[in-house]
Image 1: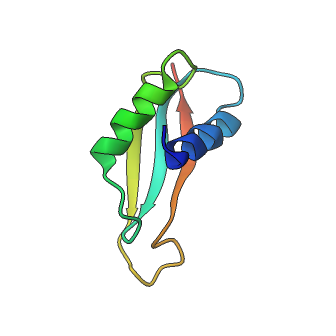
Image 2 (image 1 turned 120 degrees about the vertical axis):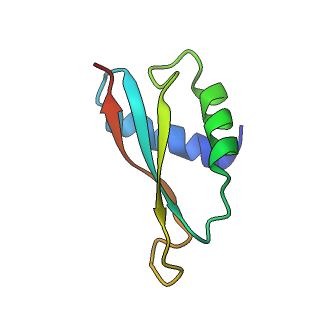
Length: 82
């Protein structure tokens, strides 16, 4: 498991507040060089058996290369399962 996926799992865990998660919203900067498809696969494999298992990743792109978040990849929030 990549250190990026480990970091995102840890961030999502701190935001879930004890429940099962349906969606994880991830901020991705335009200069972050991240493949959403690959990240979804790796996250899904790493989250297997946890309350984050099966969660959909929702990507929020920061398109401005001058933004302070242009290189960022981080969990913004999680949506609890219904």
